[in-house]
View 1 (cartoon, rainbow, N blue to C red):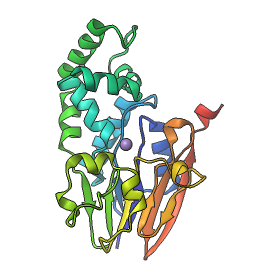
View 2 (view 1 turned 180 degrees about the horizontal axis):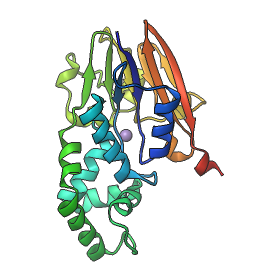
View 3 (view 1 turned 135 degrees about the vertical axis):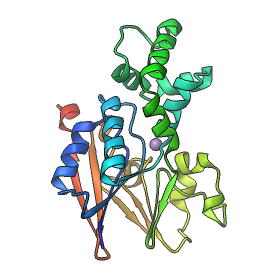
Length: 240
Ligand SMILES: [Mn+2]
């Protein structure tokens, strides 16, 4: 039985991702790596993080899920409507755009922004296709992994709308888990679920977002022989 290693909300923190894989002694032949989404925005190296995730999926058998930030990044580049544009910049999108197309200017300059979007479409269609193709959940005999959570209103959770998989918060955190499997999720920082950025273990639910891009930490949850272990890398750079 392979070890399962789960990581969420990398948000452009490539250094911490690589360090975490190292401290957890990740080896692709022995471990099943599951990434729970939100590769871009806020952190400094979104483009390189997506490159790394693509490599892990294509050459090392990793599983990568889609997060709301990944979904919005693709929407912003391909469609770029006013609403998605303002949400994108409100939630750390400038860092992502700058990591793809370094330019000087402000989010309010539509001309510059549209030029940058065009460059991304021209040079990074492979990234956009990759992110768009990612699944919303991963399920095996014991766990359901999902970016945000499951909407308790649906008897069959697989029938919930894609938006719930990527965005749901309180309703999911507060409701009992009736799936019969443990749900591992990110999206909501563990610091909001209990008073620590460390992994939140609740009844059948495990929240692993350590808030790395907010200067907190990147968590790695390992499941092996029916028990859990966790690894942590601090985001020292932003704390200094
Ligand atoms: Mn998210």
